[in-house]
Length: 150
Image (tube, rainbow, N blue to C red; front, side, top):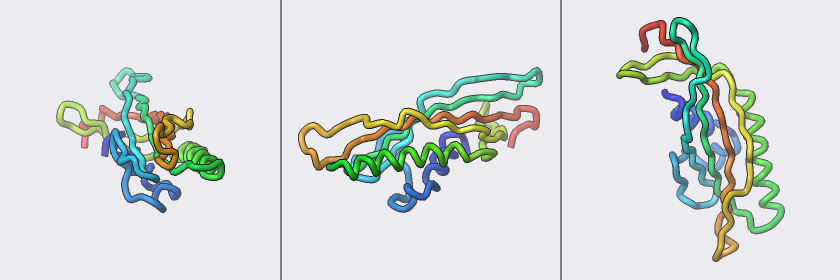
């Protein structure tokens, strides 16, 4: 699985998400309470060694729609994102594949950081609609170009 598929699967494994949802949408959520979407915002080369192996960083936005009609629900929603950020920081050494020129090269996720878990969108017309929260996730991973691909 590539970095996007791996992160999507990893997020689905988070207990607070898996309790209410079987999948995480890509790019857009369905707007209903307890729906999530993972959007890829870019991939950056951090380092490359003399034989071509790379260390890369991929950035994502995770949007989460929650019912947030009162303070209790808003505190709970923010708490889930805080817990998710801590949980993600403990996930390491996850296998990942990087496709290049029709070949998949192995690697592993070495570090995940999550930041800026914040309220992103407030319903304008109906206060009972869902509130959208956003979390920025960065995943550092390696690509081993020396083994000829998978």
